[in-house]
Length: 102
Length: 217
Image 1 (cartoon, helix red, strand yellow):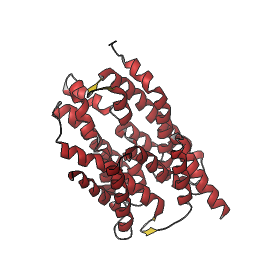
Image 2 (cartoon, chains in turn blue, yellow):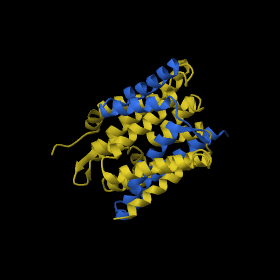
Image 3 (cartoon, one colour):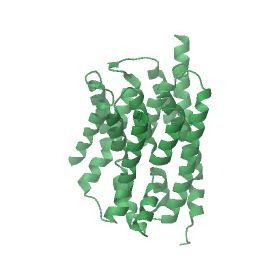
Image 4 (cartoon, chains in turn red, orange):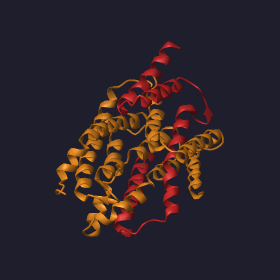
């Protein structure tokens, strides 16, 4: 089996389990506050890492290239409250334009 | 208060449904550029139904990361559905299999729409809005992954910049207060420092350790 299908299966099964855990097993009992506060910070930490690596990573190396222009343009679009699809199109278009010029 | 119906839930979420279709479409296109082919993105949207985790898994595999790294990063992002599931648990009744199925329809947006304030959740609003979002998400993915073939070379189109832009878009609403903002910046710094020394995907997982900041008062 290819790694793509393995990932699809494992992420699917894991997500099923996480989503069902509260309603099926706990049935309304609350989680400890400290645990909830730790879990709340997982999202920002992992997403921050993904933004950084996807912007500057090139395999094992770090590289500043045209992607930076696209991500900066996306940042401006987000600040201007543009809808998600438009933000992605702006990021891709800015990067493509910069590559075409250089 | 008037009794809510499944249709009320679907109607309330309709504007977000359009956005979910566009989000699904971008997943279809980008997962394809990460080497997922056309079918795997659709199956993943239908079985996982959690955008950020799916994008994370696709981007790490596309960068040459291992299966373990891709799966771990995706599940770290979905960990928030643990506490979210706990909040709706008292309002989902019926046998365990029905609670199991309804729990799968909980995503950030349907959860927000179903909230009635004061920790109360409307079961029908949750199911109605969740079903519409699910249809939009899977449908958008199918259009993106099948139609994406017509697009040309991903790098020429700048699609490699769409991945970080997407993660940035998901991050922005989460960092409105100081603590999550610090977690995001530290996560980014740790991941960049580790990139040259460990295999792809591992820096992302290591950055997750920043969440232990939550133990501090």
